[in-house]
Length: 182
Image 1 (cartoon, helix red, strand yellow):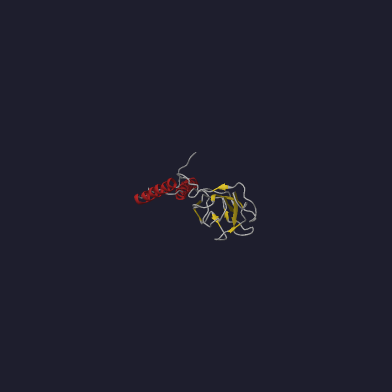
Image 2 (tube, helix red, strand yellow; image 1 turned 120 degrees about the vertical axis):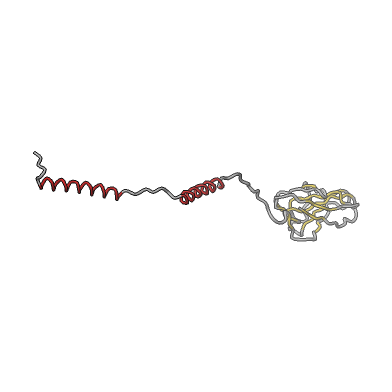
């Protein structure tokens, strides 16, 4: 059945062996040859990983500060330095008198954002007290308001204000100064 000397069979056998060898050789050429990484490459990759982890750790938020709103500049302002005196409410006895910057201009404007401290001295005069009241025409009578104490801070609500001084007696109502600080 099998003849070793048959040239056709022998040629077919050789061709089959050559085909198998080529397939094996081509298959191995297509595969990537894996070589071990060099020591320097391993160290570089390791350092890159450590650096990446350090950056991630550094990016973790520890805490947050929230800053409050505030204002710059004065909490009270004025358009005049010398006030206008209204008409005293009574010629003799106990009464009040309004002070502002003239006609209907307020003595000062408050922004309502912080404490301010008035400093003044009524001395041995007819004046018995000083208050701030909402601004009105110079001839408007004074009622209510917020009493001022020299050297004691307060935070007036935002708005326009005049001064009202209370007095007792008859005679000259002398001038005096008031300084605001914050």
